Amino acid sequence: MLNALSVDLEDWYMGLGVPPHKWNLCEDRIVKSTGKILDLLRGFDVKATFFVLGWIAEQYPELILAIKKENHEIASHGYLHKCVFNQSAQEFEFDLKKSISCISKITGEKILGYRAPCWSIRKKSFWALDILKRYDIKYDSSIYPVKFPFFGLPGDKRYPYLINKNLMEFPPSVIKILGKNIPFAGGIFLRMFPYWVVHKGIKLINKKKQPALIHIHPRELDENFSPVKYLSFKWKVFQTIRIGKTEDKFRLLLKNFRFGPIKDVFSKFCEK
Image 1 (tube, helix red, strand yellow):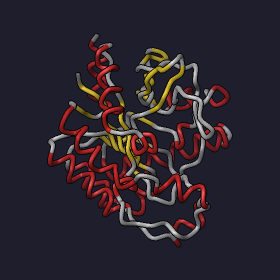
Image 2 (image 1 turned 30 degrees about the horizontal axis):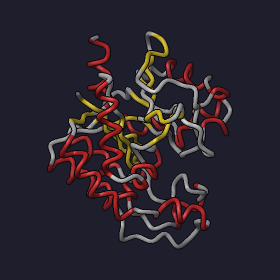
Image 3 (image 1 turned 135 degrees about the horizontal axis):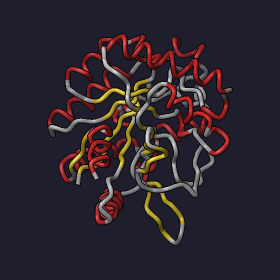
């Protein structure tokens, strides 16, 4: 079973309460931490989807070219890491268009996929899906089928599905326990759960002949960095808790499962 592997290409201070006008004051760690991910993927001969923030692409075009050179898929993560439900339709379209434009200018390739910052497409922001179709986005990975304080749509489907004939949804993986969807396969959840839980979760999904979707941030492999400025105590904990455990789990995942970019899983899904 080919599972999907994705990387949200953003620096440590993005999406953690630091406003964009302070981003230039923060220490940049994205090149070093992304390099670590690229080294690991190369070592295991695995390709992934990188959901690139447009702002990062503008600041570090050489990093985007390095990712492209390794033949990874490059998709959009928006431009300024703004939650969709905090934007108007016009603001969202402007952010999406700007991200697609600056990424495509660097790669020379069409953008097929999109992931909203903080999984922020919910029922009240489903209008964003129509805008994605307008820009010929083929798949979205923004709807997390869980109930969580910052995000989530607990009643949504757990496996890839067609929204319509032009757009597919790839939700991040969850497992159902006592009737509730439990996230386990990325971000803070990947850090918190022991490896055997993550391994078992993927196995259960694959047993149903469905692909799992794993997601990771470069900052989660940057265990030597301590973000002391600009973050509240809550976000410092969210950022650093069990961060030293991530690399070992990531290596085991790359060793024990087949992974590829979302576009390849998408192609196999469409062949069915």
